[in-house]
Image (tube, rainbow, N blue to C red):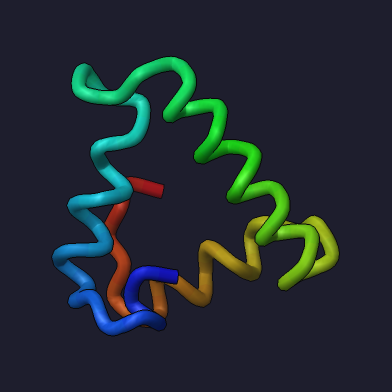
Length: 64
């Protein structure tokens, strides 16, 4: 989503890597999971692998 709104691949990857890290709060993590589940449901019928593969094809390197 960040890349689609103009962020670079590096910036989007950096943002994604902040999740579930020492700078992230439990509520941030819960919100990110809910957001990702909702997006996956709407974009790929609940299947996350096509979404992850599409992100990787666009240069995302977020450790997935």
